[in-house]
Image (tube, rainbow over all chains, first blue to last red; front, side, top):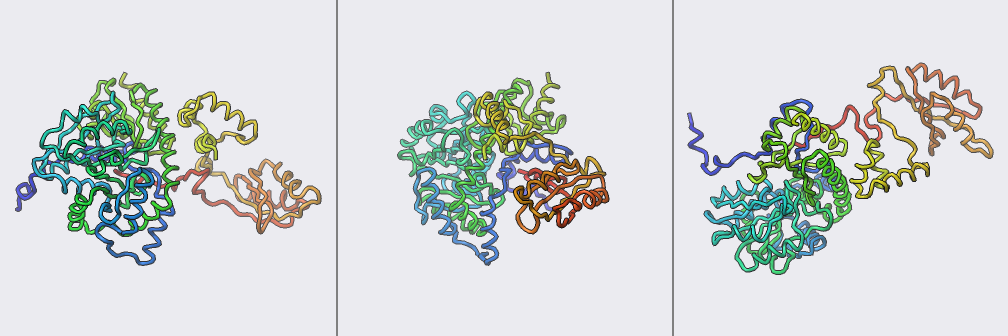
Length: 389
Length: 156
């Protein structure tokens, strides 16, 4: 018998499975569970975009594209970034189309980071950064962000963690799971620290279009930052295109060149059908983005107010589609809270600890659901809290 | 469409406080807008969406096309109002195309409805002809997918 324990890569074995997944697996076993757990839009991809994908399939456009993506799409991405965020990239060598934002994150880290070097990761944040850094043999360095700072990365917290081994700063804003955002003035402070140093920012802006109370600012648009920033974005959240698996990176040509090399060997190219659909999204999708963002915004205000009424302290998120209520008043840990809520009232939410240790005492609640669904879940959580007191 | 109206159309049980939060206006403003829409005859009622076939096995609904001769001076209004007066009639609409009025009739069985059409509607003076279509299955009602509803397939 082959002993798989000896066969498997030790680095891979050490990686912890996603803490989000674990909860869904339990929830799927139970009947009558209503979820506020998922991290994807409840909207379907706007019809015109779907139709464009279908049309190109009918016309037999089923080949590989260029490694970096269809030139047509890269051109549209570059126009879009200019139009929405005031940053300009040359579609020829500064834009790379990837399989979701996730691939762009992986490529960026692998292209930049050597084993033993440090990658700064503000937490709580999305689950993928730490394991991907570990796979490279590099060192993830969490930077704890706090509710009293609206979960922003502050200049001081950043300075405290920078060493001569620091290579990359991950900047995950608008933030999943907290909903925190970095406004221009906050980014200026970070830029001040970074302009002096050889540290590259990997700015994960996948939720950029879901920014409320104002427009998203990309750190690449701050003076002196474009040359040291790789912007990661994609179509999943803004255009409700999660299943199409399409994202992109934009940044300095020398970095993109190395990323494209890995992409070329590991992936070849992003799905061509998705790329054609994305061209349509960028050309005619601004209105759809706005309609969906507006709908999320209404739900956001409603759910924040409902949770605060439940007595769970909930900071007002300004981005993405999550709230991050503090559950410390219940005396339960995040895991206990989620487990007991799931078994007693059959509501699935995700423990804050899935997003880093600093998520202890919080839960992630998604409002990517209809108002009626949200209100039903809130009612069940109210009943659950009543049983605790 | 006004956002307040679309929210109410989707869920008329939202409280003024909830509506105010969602629209980022004051509760008084919500109350005032609702009052205005009511008095303008725009907001005319708050109803529940009910799957009647599931509630009551003895429920039948039919769509009756009526071809009618319009009356001088009164056009279609006179006959439409007359038809609308029956308790069995749920809705009456004037249509463009192959017929003039569509009349939605409810009853406890097919025969009742057929008899109602034969005795009450087709005997009306200006009615030239009728065609009765029984509703067999509802898939979507007031924007809500019924029973056949899609499951939330999202899993991540």
